[in-house]
Length: 68
Image 1 (tube, rainbow, N blue to C red):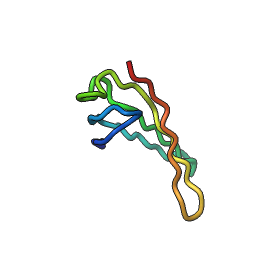
Image 2: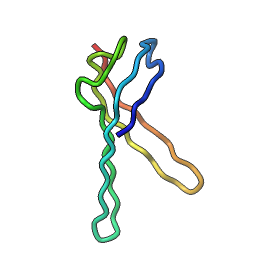
Image 3: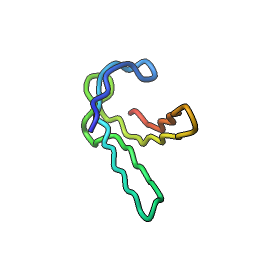
């Protein structure tokens, strides 16, 4: 679990992300999603998922979300 605080598309507030990872015969998978009803202030109603793309020497993040 992770608490994120900041501004997203002009909406200030916070929300929680849930990370879930597995390793199956050497194949890793990771799921990161917004915890339902965890948004505060301007992020109430936030829904979304995040991909973490790992390459040598860096991590990139793709956050797909909707706000009411």
